[in-house]
Image 1 (cartoon, helix red, strand yellow):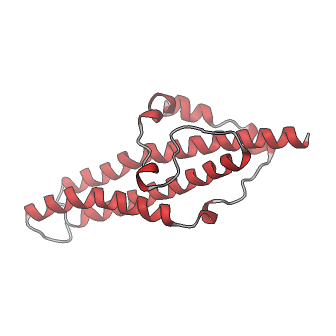
Image 2 (tube, rainbow, N blue to C red; image 1 turned 60 degrees about the vertical axis):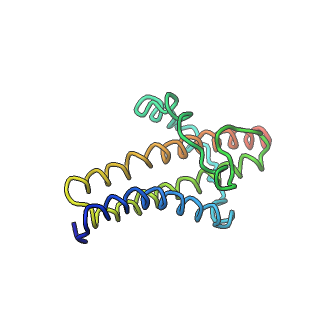
Image 3 (cartoon, rainbow, N blue to C red; image 1 turned 30 degrees about the vertical axis):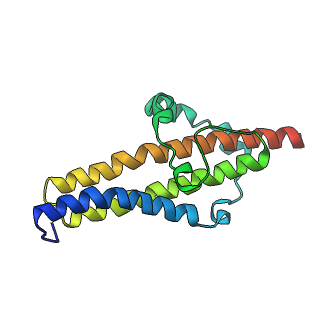
Length: 163
C-alpha cells in the first residue's frame, strides 16, 4: 500500500470508484471517432484459413458464456453488439470496428483499475488485481472471438464477389 488512508475511505473509494472508472472509460471510448477503429482488415486467405475458433471454443468454452456478458454499448448510446442485426457489408465493418472499440475499452479499464492497489492493503490489493483481470478478460475474449467470426464472413463475401 503506497497511499495510507483510513479504512472507511478505502471502502468508499473502492465502492464508488471502481464502477465509476468502468463507466467513465466506456463512455470515453464511445466518444472516440469511428475512424480510429475502422482500420482496413487484412483479408488474406492464410489468416482466415487458420481457424482460431476452436481455441476459443475448446480452451475458453466461449459459446457457453458469451451471451451472458452485458452489452454496455446501448447504455451509453453506443453500438449494440448483442446480436448481428444485418449481413450488409457496411454494417459488418461497423460491427468489427465496434469490437475494436469494446476491446480497447476493456483493456484500459483493466489497467486503470489496477491503480486502486495504491491505497488497498494486502490482500485487498490482490483482490483488486484479480477483479481487474476477471471482469475484463471475458469481454476482451468475446470481442476478439466475435471480430474473427465477422472478419471471416467478410472474407468469404469478398472471395465470392471477386472469384
